[in-house]
Image (cartoon, rainbow, N blue to C red):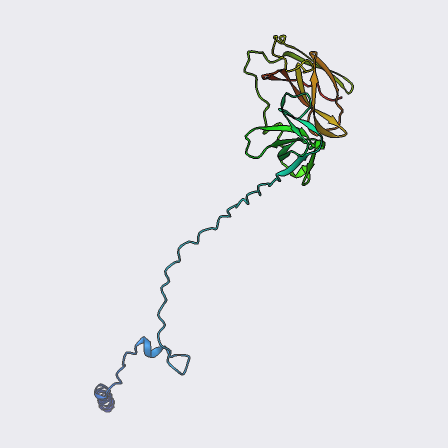
Length: 266
């Protein structure tokens, strides 16, 4: 019985050894490494060419436009130069725009003058004979003009100066002005006129130039005086302040001016 079991164990062992030998001699399948390229399949039927990344050079920063204010030059006003013909038989041409200014020369009827300037209202015009370098003032109503007097440039007082005396006279001093409502009284002091220096027996000793408020407008108003005091009417209601000045007058010219300390309007 024991021998029988031993025999059976040997037989089983023999079969087992054969099976192991067969297993050792049977070729095993070789695993071929698969690259990543063969493992990842494209999603498109056609193979796309590799796309190269585009390298861009950054553009230079754009300059911010700066607004430049271009000023358009104001047009230079143009003024007319008129031609005037004397109407009266005789007319005086003076150093300033008024009958109280010194006399320069006289003109007769039919004489012609170039009209090159005016006062603010155009009531007096600055004239000059052609070929002459002297200019003087004539009252506009004494001339027949070939155009509108207001088209001529206003030149007094900013662009025209009355002649200064070559004598040793002082300008008026201690000039004062006192207002009573619309009346302004102006006074001053001066030295006396020396003998032989009067233009004529009727010539004024002082010229008072005032810019007075009248009906809401500032109007140039020159005055002649024989005494060292005048009274003028000056209203309220003008955008610009009234003002004035005083000259001492003698036949060679004028001493001054002295400014008037103008009292404010009520």
